[in-house]
Each structure stands twice: as structure tokens, then as C-alpha cells.
Image 1 (cartoon, rainbow, N blue to C red):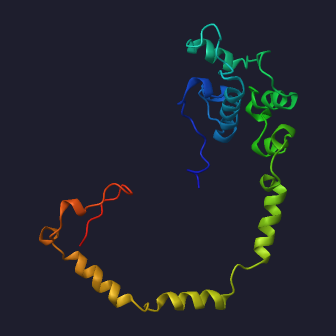
Image 2 (tube, rainbow, N blue to C red):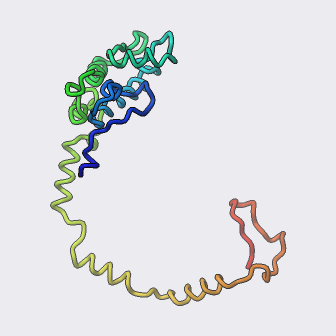
Length: 194
């Protein structure tokens, strides 16, 4: 639909996370801009600071925006980050959105794949999906038997229904109980004898 595939035009969000193309106030691809924002999140997790903030003036949003537009960032020397990770950040923080790394490319990047559980790889997911497609979870007969069983009234259905109806019309003021018989200590639940 045209709504799902429309080009975003809004400029909202925390300035530190906004991609340069969003700041330019032109139409942009939201998915590509989100890659930039996710890169900011990754950087913050690794470094503990925003990549485009001026360390001397972190609250100066004008400087932050200027640094975003010029893609001016660096990983501090005191932070130990692998070369693969630095390479990934350099592919995420690209001013031209057409040249920025895509989600499928990120999923195949060496840093992303390092120590990734096999169950999370695309190949494993595809093989499991194909295996599921070729193996029906239930036969039609099994499904019909379950439906028929569910439609049968249970052995105690009338008894339970009668008890529920009785409880629904019960006036709790008419019940005689001693306040000392109420157990509120054992589980935190309010329990009283009926």
C-alpha cells in the first residue's frame, strides 16, 4: 500500500540518533535512517557516550547536528573495540544513505557473525523453515479429532456450571466466619472459609 511504502518527511526524535538525511528535511528511506540510529545505539553501548556529541560540550545540540552532518566521530583510544566492529561502524556512519550498509549486509558482517549462535543465522532459519514446510505438524484427521473432542461436554461440566452459578448469586454478607480464620500470612492471597 502507499501508506506502508510512503517516504517519511518528519524530523522527530533525539538529536543524537537522527541520521543526516533526516536532518536535511528531504524525503528519506526510514529503514536506511534506522540503520544509522541503530549504529548510534551500538556506539553508545560500546563507548558509553554519543558518537557525535562534542565531549567538551555534550549539551550543545547545534554542535551535535553539525558533527552528524559532517559524520565527525571517533572511537576513543581508551575503549577496546575490535577492528571488525570499527569497520562496521564506519559502514553504518556514512553520510550518503545510498552508500550506507543495509540490514542484510550487517547480518553478514564478520563482527555480527562472530560468536552468533547457529540458531540465529539466516541459513539455519531458512533450513528450519523449509523443514517445517515439508513436515506437517498434524494430519487433517488429528486436527478434526481434536476439534470434535473439544466440542464434547466434559464429565463434570454441569456440576461446575452449577457451582459457578451458585457462587455468582452468593451474598458474602450472609456468610458467618471468624476474622481469626482468615489466612493472609501464608501466600499473600486473601483466603476465608465459606
